[in-house]
Image 1: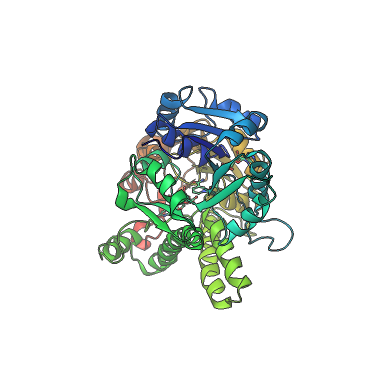
Image 2 (image 1 turned 90 degrees about the vertical axis):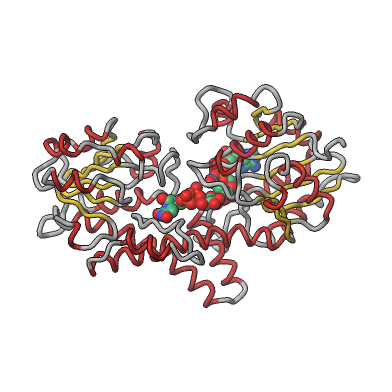
Length: 459
Ligand code: NAD
Ligand code: UGA
């Protein structure tokens, strides 16, 4: 039987649109996939050997499909593809609003609305419009009202197909997802999209719900994940003052099959473009329905995360600050700037808050990361007092203190016996990810402060 969807367009060639469409094109060689973006530089990068995002396994998937049934185009060229498409994914950014009603909390739907206008202007016949971006619940109503402006004879179905991939494991998550969620109002379009995913995802993992449940489930999934991180981070502070070890506590708690072991790694705080944004969106939605207690409950997950980042920065400063609290003439090595390993993404990385707090007290920072570019670092924390190091060694040379902020695997293998000589005497390593070789550090005579580890771990 001929599939109902032969031609797909995805608007938005970002961390989600690019990898998701590459995997669909790879798994479905008979489906024509076009990814369009208004950012011409990003499109040029997708068409080059230097892809715009770093994601393990992505380059291989792109190189198999690009030029066969996968193409990346600018907006002008994209219009004709939208006209011919059976399905159009909207995969643009939905950041927290910075002005107007809901500023600081609500998701900004201006990019989504602009996509809907673009689709309304160019679509022909019947098109399935698919929300891939994370949207507030009932966002589909707004998209529908914009699509209603399309010409006569042009019709649409709307589906919500939120993405659950995590950066750093995007290709693995897309190729073997825990579930694919499709929310809709009519069975036919749901089946048409499900048919695509079922080519490589077991049928029982392709779930379907109503439109509003799908939109809300995505926000709730992220809120629950972020809540686990804030929960364990709250316990990390308690471990530090009581002498308990958060890794031991997490491992005991996680053996309860009702709780499970994942997402219980204490850290300097969660980052990334979505956890905080989606929590704030959930909080705003709850408030707008008058559910003050629900909003306050989730707000605490955000507040605890902020507190954890500041707490960590203050622990770095405490042993090296002057009596007045200044960090002038103090050099601090920052190991890792990305919000997690295996990505070059710095959006909402905890490193931003930690670095800004140290810079505000006059510190000089030597920042190292394996994948983040100097430009990305500069755009988040500026260049004043900031030196970008090309190796961990270069960052550590002459440092009064060290902060490990990203869990890059290579940081776990640093040779502290050798490195101890290049650090200032008495320097303390503050491990915000619990990955460094604690025994080697202590043996080298360096100080170590590990997140969520009590006194016996501190020199
Ligand atoms: P991104 O910023 O990396 O990419 C969005 C792209 O959309 C940009 O390249 C931008 O230029 C483009 N764009 C914006 N408006 C456009 C328009 N009108 N026409 C054409 N292109 C336009 O964002 P992302 O990380 O890919 O996230 C996209 C959505 O997916 C968000 O809603 C996010 O919450 C959600 N999400 C992200 C992740 C993740 O890991 N990053 C995971 C799951 C869901
Ligand atoms: C997260 C979700 O895991 C994805 O399912 C979701 O699709 C995505 O958000 C999204 O909507 O954008 P992502 O932010 O890419 O994915 O990465 P995570 O692995 O979830 O990590 C988020 C942050 O939490 C990172 O800073 C990470 O270091 C931190 N974290 C995670 C911890 O501190 N401890 C943990 O145990 C797990």
